[in-house]
Length: 356
Image (cartoon, rainbow, N blue to C red; front, side):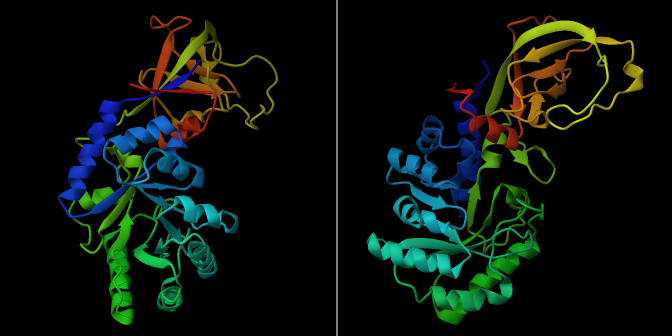
């Protein structure tokens, strides 16, 4: 059976790298745990490292956080749905918001639960996911300031996650200016300018972060050590916090080209044949994961001579070339993962999760 391993020492190394980076610049930060899909053991590892603020996009995951430690500040990082308002107030200390109607409901529920709920109002900065349009910001804030049991603790933005719009000095300066404008207009203090995510770290490393941006929320770089501008590992970080292991369940030398009339496979794909492969053979191994677990493009084999040639729902075929390279049935093949691949694996009940 395939299994995933999380390496505590590598996770700790990356966490300490980021903690030093942020604390040396007076930046508050929280860990995004949505990748962990509510895995209690993995979330506990994050808390044990010293995380005092955890961000997630699932209320059930924040409930897990609170079951481990009531002292951790929980942040719900997408606009709440109407039907989740009660649980948002119950399990999230802070939520990201863009709709006045939703904030009104949060205010009413916070009064009901006798709580003061913090919110970060997200501003649209070009990626066209969530966010209040800039021309509406002042009017929006003027209405929210009047609501009881609501504390505006920050102004924020999200970039890169939908259309790939990258953060820049100009965009983050603009976000900081919105904060200054609101504070001057209403004579109210807004503690956080939450403009930082994993994709913003390269600006920080180049000392290009506008000083007004004082809050980061990071996930991907913690787990993968990746510079999302260059798609290369950040110097001094680890890129193998997670490793996936899958077992070889068949290994034969077979033709490289299928035999027979070709049609769509169950995934809707039609194989394009390289004519140079006619008459050639290679050693092909089947491993015990498939499309139900992960899409092949998110796998990075540790053995760079391995080529992933295709997958069905529960099995994946790899090409070992002209030799078996000493592989045999029962051996484990190890992979590093891309973010979306790790998300699939961590969301699967069919893959065992271990801590090393």
